Image 1 (cartoon, rainbow, N blue to C red):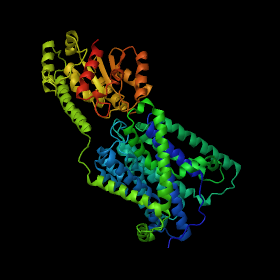
Image 2: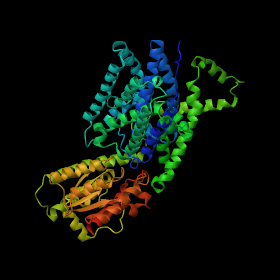
Image 3: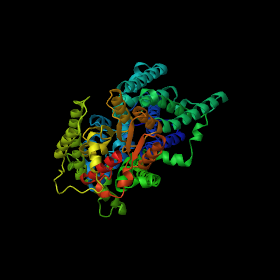
Image 4: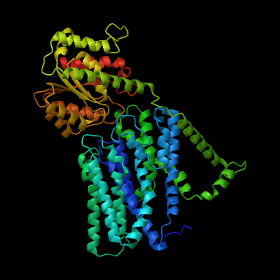
Length: 636
């Protein structure tokens, strides 16, 4: 029999902590380059979960002499599964109807989430948490729930073992804290600067330190043993510690990017310690922090924070797939998305999470039979049940129809084009590298250009090749043949790379899908160190996110003042940062005399027929305009 715990104290301020955490995560996902540390809301959830779960288990152990592990599992399943399962089935049903390109690997995604190992699926499939441009999965954020699920599975067993073997608080605290430290150390060791940090970001082994810090706090700071009446000095100390930790938490929300080396070399561990201090101050009834974090809004949002977290990504992914000009009104669209997320999570909390958490599943059979009776007392409510069955059917249909690859033809064509371009450009780069130290003559340049043209999809004699108004004149063509250029960029440059090398046979191109500013800085520094940076540098960076003034300065410092820099601005209306990137480049062109911005955005913004369905990458037709416009901007 599951005996209830005595003296359970509901700490209202914890709803405030949940609200701050979930707000940080949502604003990070909506504006990842404004609230660049908002992802740190997840470690707050981890520390809080570690504290609360350990606190409850310790209470049960002290009052009952044992932990009813099966009863604990049942409580966790009833609390978490209804919301999670509903969200997954609803999301997959929507995908089946409206965004079938997201059905790739959907069976594995569903199963790994149901058994709480989805984070390792993401690690194995090398999914990036930080690539904000590529196709976004509505399930990306569920990695954290898998880590918590794994914790819930093993922690009652491990905690029971610790109390049986060690028995004393301080040694148990030491063991748990050392475990947290080793997890943080593993994160620092496995992190590789210049590489996508998603492995250490998703890994249970490298993220468990936040949960363990909360667990360690609970061992020394049990909620039922904290006294309301404490000396004024202790009270003031707790208040000051709580306020300082809260200020630092908010400051780090804005100033600790998820791709910074400092984040993984102790930064996230320090943040988790701050979260533990903040939670300790709020938990203590003798301090004022509980009252500070308690109000109606925080209480309402905090109770729905699980649903808010569940539905944030699906709402964002589906909304932004339909609204193609997010960049035109970024704040308005963000506001609308937040409203949708809150409404959906409230419905989930009211009609799914709470009722099913308290439902007696022993009466499941009777409930189902009553539901299907002709004169059922459920009445019109059976419409909800019918809708649920339709959703389950659509989700299972999508799982059965799981494609081997993207179902969007445009995506497939773009990916094939970029892959083919990467191979051709690598061959051309290698060919150029083999002739280092030699100056190519005009005749030789023309021959190389002819070879490249013959390999491209459109040949000069092909009647289907579009006529591009205002093409290069003979003087420009000759100049282009002998001009040495180093080009570094993202997938848009990769898309147009062969066309550009067609016009500039001696152009060296390093373009990669998903490339962001830190990666570009590393590439340019490597080229500069090896003496391979030409006097003319072409950059195409900004499609995948904005950059800081310091990062732009790093680029210009690497290039130096004697080289000419041509920077292609962005046409990415589906992302909020389009205007931010273009504005930054416009300001920079006034500051650096050797920087010229190639205004591809203005030139192309009214020509949707130049682009693939993503309205970002030029299609085969648009590439002719793209390459010619860039060439003219460089040569004029």
